[in-house]
Image (cartoon, rainbow, N blue to C red):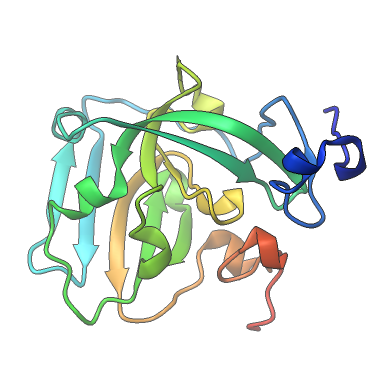
Length: 200
């Protein structure tokens, strides 16, 4: 993978690259474990935990939610950044509108295929820029990039943008997800270089 250092970029572009990052024009594939074999006929999306009533959506019900487009930059903890991404999908706030989250909920645990999880503060999750994406730069997501649905949270390191998402669990406290249990930061702000954890 060819990376471009900050010193090779114009000041305007370099200002969009967080500390310790380099620019890539390709989209590297990084994940732990195998790519899941997803059957849309049995796929569902659940909203559980601190909600008034749990919700389960089929693929058709999920796809019936309003579609939207977002434009952003993404930054991986492995030190690459990719600028000017176009995502098509369903806004996080349109999914949240399907469930009544209890006032004591402060965090959300993202559940994905193979039992994979990632944690987010509700304030980081419930943002205008965030969405559940099914297309990137005009193309349907490939399986290795998270098809059929991946979360996109562009203001945090990209491991928080979970692939193969299957549901949300609302919590009253912060619970580490898979990578957070294995040494990654509980929040992951790229501008503060929150790469690794100090919580344990």
